[in-house]
Structures are given as C-alpha cells and as structure tokens.
Length: 98
Image (cartoon, rainbow, N blue to C red; front, side, top):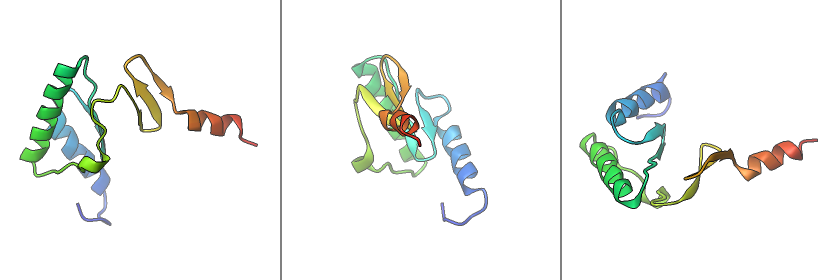
C-alpha cells in the first residue's frame, strides 16, 4: 500500500483480518504470530497462512521470519509455550527510570 494515504494502516489491518480470519494466527500490521500446540500442527498452520497470503498477492519477507521457535519477542512481549511476559528490556527500562 502506498505510504502517505489516509487510514492506510487501518485499511491494511482490516485486509489482513479478513484474509486470516479463520486461521490459527494473530496478525498485527506486518507481524504475524502463529501459535500451535505441536510441530505437526505448526507446519500445517504455516502452510495455510502462507497459502492464504499467496492467494491475495502478499509475500512475507522470509529473512525476517522466525519459524518453529519455542520462545520469541512479539509486540514488546516475550511469548513462549508456557506464558507471556514483558520483555526484559522493557522491565529494565522501567526499573532504571530516573
């Protein structure tokens, strides 16, 4: 989507929501989280998301993708199989705030 358009962000988010509505994932602008219960279902979920994006002409930047991780940083939170917690850097910034 061209930059500088009014409401472009909201339009793109709505577009992603429509594309990925019934899939096992969460998308926020250019970040997509696919959380699955095991490896087999994760690969199936990845395939479904990539197929849906491809059908709509969207191409993920594979160099920025993190696939099959047990723990990762997502929207300022550390997300793992067991829990979601604020990133250590965010907590440290609050603790050390003058």
